[in-house]
Length: 416
Ligand code: NIG
Ligand code: FE
Image 1: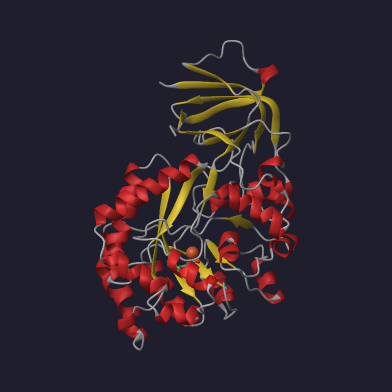
Image 2: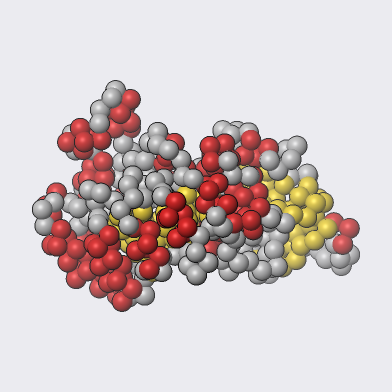
């Protein structure tokens, strides 16, 4: 048995006996233990408390002096598109030069550009590049990750992406969840035949996905010019036949009814939410819906859009999670430290609220709440050690500075 004792932690952050989804006022409460120890057996948290209460007999194979670091649970990033074939910085420059979204799409840009490149890339090459990105994220403190398909948009392409995610799950040191997002955009071939593509998803993709257990959730990009509410309902209802609950892209650009429909479909999370009406905020705050509002501020930042109304959502009592949306088109970074900073700077979330939203609630948004997201006995020792800081608020305050000293996954330090 491998045992680890971490001593002299300046503050052990997010220590909880049990975790429920944090909503409204509850997001402000971030339980911490100052001058603490943490004890780990075979990668699992077994004990923690104040240094003065450290049992004398407690010893371990590895004794680590935290040397005044803050110790936090790793980030739980519940929305990413980590698997892709190529970056899209040429579109980034086109936008700076004033080209419109339509003009970029006409040049072969956007999601369809990523799909063409993905379909022309081998499964092994996709796996290698995604595995490298994954390890870069882990070094930045990500200790659990959701990854979507959605750049295949063909039977072979979607299955290839999902098989890559399955390999990542098998080989990664952190828990990974897989989401089926064939309903990300209509491929050119089906531009005028939506019915044909929906049938391809329902009849040709979903049965194979269920058979090979390639997905944990189903997702749809519900937006003008993409999938209508009715199309989203059909895909989600078909997914539900195979036990897949929805995590949905809604209200990024327009409000077309995705929120009410998503709640009725019992979505695990409703993601993006840049564009919300007062009524929709009220729906999202309904205590009868046990789902989360997942905000993706780096996508709003990169696309130069309005940020999600985090303050209004929290003040209305909503359960807010934060995620990176890492993808080559709208958020070419999966750095959760920056997501947390940006949430405080631009969305006026308190540091405590942002940390809770990126840990406990992120774990709930992936159904990983029993494994990660807090310092709780029985959960994985996936933890961040910070550099010396004057207070916890320094972490989001010092945006762009890497405040992570080291990262521990399953009780072992990650080599960087
Ligand atoms: O979550 N909004 C839809 N999908 C992605 C962007 C996809 C892309 O541009 O490649 C997102 O932001
Ligand atoms: Fe996304």
